[in-house]
Image 1: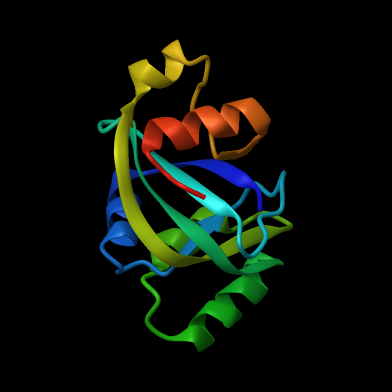
Image 2 (image 1 turned 135 degrees about the horizontal axis):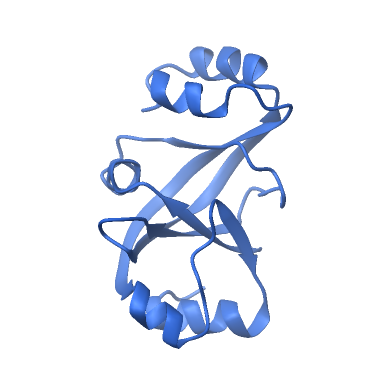
Length: 142
C-alpha cells in the first residue's frame, strides 16, 4: 500500500467526503495509483488543509476518450463534464474509485510547511518518514 498526498479543489473534496463523488480523475500519471493505496486529500485554496482521505478501489489508466466511455457505463458516479474536460488532451489519464472516504484531523498548510512538506500540484507518493508524519498528524491508523 502506497500513501499518496493528493491536492484537490474543495468542491470535489467535499463531494468525495459526502459520498457524492465516487471517482477522482487525474491527468498527471507520474505514479500509478493501485487498489488499496491510501489517498490523503489536501484541499487547495481557500481551505488550504488536509481534511480527509479514502482508499483507492478500481483504477483505470487509459485515454480520455476511453475513460469517458468507461465512466458513462458506470452510471451516476459524481463525475461531471467539468471533470471530463479537465483530462482531455492527454495521452494517459487516471480514474480512481473512491472507497471508504473519511474525514481526518485537520492539518493546515502552515503545519505542513513546518513539517517540511508542501502540497503537490496534482499528487505525490509519500515515502517512509514523510508518510508516518502525515498519518500521525491526520490521526489515521493503517
